[in-house]
Structure formats: structure tokens, C-alpha cells
Length: 392
Length: 246
Image 1 (cartoon, one colour):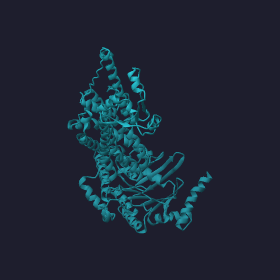
Image 2 (image 1 turned 60 degrees about the vertical axis):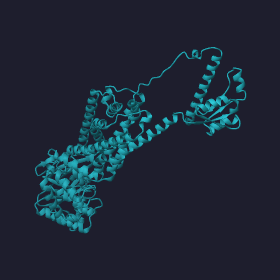
Image 3 (image 1 turned 135 degrees about the vertical axis):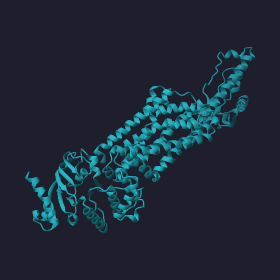
């Protein structure tokens, strides 16, 4: 035990003095996540506000043939601007992006309308251009609305109740709560926590294994009267402390960032107060052992600092895979998922943020299975260190 | 007291050590001499229990390096070839870390570290971080931490490599002092003159085998060469000839 503590303390002090380790543990992880998150949220807030009926410009050719339609469009906050000179230029203008959408009103529009033949009107848009997508949708919707208005008027004029044209009255009811809506966006934050956690211990895991070998301090260390198991356990524990510190900092920095984000504008109120921050910390704590042991194990196989860095960046991404699969397939939390580290933490964390009742059994399985896997990996490290091939 | 008995070690197809036997008694300096790649380092690495021999035994003060390696390690202080320090720790902290790992009491550690720092003459840079130390400074600190638990047996793998004249001299003085304390010093080198200047017994290794294990005068007599370098070459050729005879 004394040996483990000695190794543990030395690795902590040694690495606290290493600027790169400290920067990645205490700055990189905790800052990268929230900054990225704030960026994405801001982007979606901008988009959400855009979707509202803000003024948009619509280029029209032949607007003089349909003054009523133009007034109707203007009433829906669509500003009419002049399009290209002639109809032939319309397709080109849309293709080159001069205009996202162009409405063409043919000369005989008014005539057809009064003859009650379907009046031809052309809407040019580029479906491959996602930017113009929103504008063309809005223009189309406005035209449909005008269409409905006209048909209602025609029916009324002939003494028919326009309601006959509406056999169905579809009412969509969204049952998601503001906390629930947040979970979709905040789902990605569980990965940031795991990323920050792993990042926090990455350089330590490298330094205590591949780094130690590369600078030639491993061989004298192994010639001391201590068992190799004690050495590796002390090293893994030191890595755990850095990971836990990085996790805690990133939780706190998220808490702070969320406080300043105008999430209400998106109809979200994430349940991420201090109690949830604390609960999330303890929920993710078992993952710290797993992450530290896994990174130490992988780094122990490598021959040099650089090689270890390459392999550990793969380990950084690995925990996203189960989260990604479940997010794409939109699977609900199931008992089996709780055996998978990173996924179980993600699912429970999402429930916490949604402010939904938590399943005690799920939490117990998540904690236990993660701890067991962490312990197995630690044991594997100790085994690996007993091999003499370790010295390379 | 270190006794090595017919140890063998292969790395894949390379048979690096092929039946090396020798003894390094207390109160004497034993030199392990041989050309590069002769198997010196492998032999020493087996002695400080970093490698296991494929065959044969090595015993350090009664502790077998394979079956009782933890006890054997308490009895040795090892300075591996190219040993590295922790660059973010000061020299003193590097030494104290090893003292703690060797199980010294908290109260003892400071005194012991101060003592060894004085003995090795590293006070001037003891409280500086070891990043950027010269080779001589590094060797001294490495040696200090190897000696911090007061081991009876000291194993040094090419300790004078990369040292200048002054550093080599001070290292030599230190090795002689260890001998005078009655310790068993085993050190390897590929420089005949250096071994001759220090050692009581010399074990010349070539091609993974012991060519000659004798005192300096004994080696001169048996090779029939007065010049030490010639004697060294002759001894190595003896192994080569014996191989061809087989």
C-alpha cells in the first residue's frame, strides 16, 4: 500500500509540473466541450429564429399580372423584388445563386384565373441548394395558402360551404416537455464529459508507461524491491485523479455555460442544476477507472510517446460509437444497454437532464458493470507489466 | 555476493547469453568486460531481475533472482545502461522517490537522501529539476538513487559511458569507496583500460560466453600478452577459436 501511495503521489506531482498534461486535463477538455456546445446551440437558436416569419425577399417576374397575389404575399411578410428581365433568365439566376427562388407569373395568368381554368404559375428553385430550401418552402406554402383562399372564395360564391373541402381537422399535439426537448440537443454533452474525462488522463497514461520507457526510467524502476503490480496500480490511480478532476471541471463549466445560454428561446429548460451536476459526477466516476485502466493498457503496448498518442486518440473516439449507434437508431433505454459503459452513462444522464424518473436498477448495473470492466482492465495491466517483453 | 551459474538467454533466434558463470565477491570490484553485443547487458539485466534467464541460476546474497526476485531486489542497487531520470522532479526528489519505494521510513528519508547527496557530491544541483542535466550529473543522480537503500550489491551497466574525464574520475573514486565499505561491486564496460584501473577480478565475455575470468595478472599470464588491450583481444579470439573447433 505504501508503495502504491508513493507511486501515486510521485506521478501526481510529476505531471502537475508538466504543462502539457495540465493543459490537456484542466483546460482542453473542460473548455473544448462547452465552447463547442455553445457554438452549436447558438447556431440552432439562430436557425429557429430565422424560421419565424421574418421578412424574406422573393424575386418575381411579371408581378404586374397578379397584383392581388402580390398583396397577399406581402401580407405574409414576403417582400416582392424584381426578378431578371425575362423568363429565360430565371433558371440561370437560380442556378447561379443570384436568387434562391423566383416566381414567374405568365402574361395570361389573370385571364386564366377569371376563366376558372387552373392558372399556371412557375416557381423556380434549386433543390440541391439547401440554403434556398427554406425560402422555396415558404414561397410554396404562401402559394398554397393563396390557392386555398381562392378556392374557398369560389365555393362561397356558388353557395357551397368551404368547410366541405376539409374532411379532416388534423391537430398535432407535441407531448415533449421543455426538459425533454433539451435532451435531444444535450444528448451530445454526455460525450463531451467522457471526452474531457479521457483527455484529462491521456498524457498521464502515456507518460507513466510509454514515456517512462522512452526516457529510460522504467528499467531502474523495475529493479527496485517493489512488485510491478504495485507500480501499475499507483500509476492508474494517479491517472484516475486527473481524469476525475477533468470530469468535475467540465461538468462545472457546462453548468456555467448553460446558465448563460438563451435556451428558453428554443423551448428548452434542461434539468442541470447543482444536484444533477453532482449526480452526473458520481454516475461517471466508475468510468474514470475504466478509462484510466484502458488508456494505461493501450499505452503500455506502444513503444514510444508518439505511438501511444496515435493509439490513444483512437481510444478517445471509441466511447462515442455506442452512443452514436443508439442515437441514430433512437433506441429507448433498455436493461441490456446498462451493461455497456459510456452508453449506460449516456442514457442515464439523458434521463437526468430530461428530469424523468430514474431507474435504480439501471444505475446499479451501469455502476457495477463499468467498475468490473475497469477492474479487469487494471488486472490486465498488471499482467502485462509482469511480462519481460514490456521493456521492448 | 553475486553468484551466476550457467545462465542462458535468447531473444527470438538470437542466443545472447550462452552459459555464463562467474562470482562477484563482497569487498571486491568485479568487471564484466566484452565487446559491444557480447551479452554483458543481458547478463546484468538478469541479475537485477528485469529479465528472466531461460536456463541457469543467479543468486544474490542467497536470494535467487527468479524464484525470490523481490528479496533479491532488496539486496541490489542497479544502474542500468542509459538510465533516465524524471525531468520534472529535482535531483533530490528523484532520489527520495526511490527511497520511498524501497520502504524507507518517512523520518529516515530526508536524512538518507541528504547523506547520499553529500556522498556523491551533488549538492550544487540537488534542488534543480533534472531536465537539462549533463550526462555526468544524470549519472550521479541515477547512482545516488540506486544507492539510497544502502544495498550490499551494486550493479553498474557501463556507468562511464558519455562521461568526461573529471566525471569519470569522481565515479571511479566512488566505486573504490563502495569497495572499501565491503560491498560487492559488479560493473560492465567495453574499455579495457577502465576495467584494469578499477577491478580486482575481470570476467571477459565474448559472444555470450565467458572467455576468461581471472585477476588482471592472471589474464596477462594466460593470454601471454603483457599489453592489456592485446590480452583482451587474445581472450576474445580464444572464444572464437573454441567455437570453430566445435
